[in-house]
Amino acid sequence: KFFPGKRTWTAFSTHASARFADFLRTGRDILAVLVVALAPTACAPADPDFGIQLQDINLRQAENGLSVTARQRLDLSREARAALRAGVPLRFRIDVSLRLAGGMRASASESFVYELSYLPLSRRYQLKGPDESRPATSYPRLRHALAAMTTIELPVTEFKAQAATVTLRLRSRLDRAAMPGPMQLPVWLSPDWNHDSGWQAREFELNG
Image 1: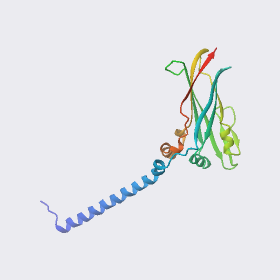
Image 2: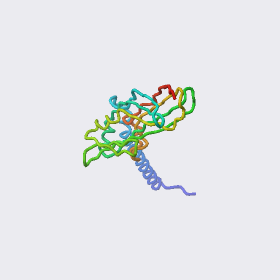
Image 3: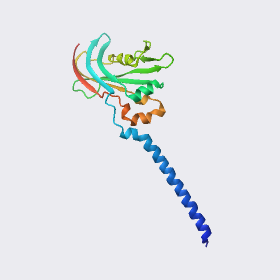
Image 4: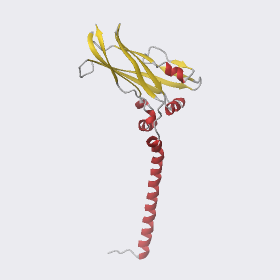
């Protein structure tokens, strides 16, 4: 049988202690990085001056179906403004759901996307609406581009009922899943990226 000598055992113990110390230092370094990365998210209070609020939701019959009109208040957080200025486009998704009153399933469900971007060469803000046949519009100031999204009018062509009581559900939000890959984890973790009106419901009478 092999019994290590005192010198061999001392060398082994010294090597193991050094490896364990390196392990502890590495663990402390990783923990420090995680604390720095998550501290703003976990500790910083949400900015109360940003978000999306839906107002004055209406539904009317149009020539090719129904038309949804709503007013919204859209204010960007400091983080969203900084990302926009750095060249990251922001996509806003508006979800519309219509169902017969008392029904469990949606009779029509559609989504509409607005894309807001910054053009550094011209120092203008560009807004592309859900109608792909219309060209994007540029604005000299961010507030002008956001004002263009204050009133939204959306066509709903999939709803077939002519005369009924219908429930309209509407939601406006920043599409965080559309952000660039390296940004998605911080965007999902940070409350400063939570631009979401939540679902708002209204009932309307269609006369056929």
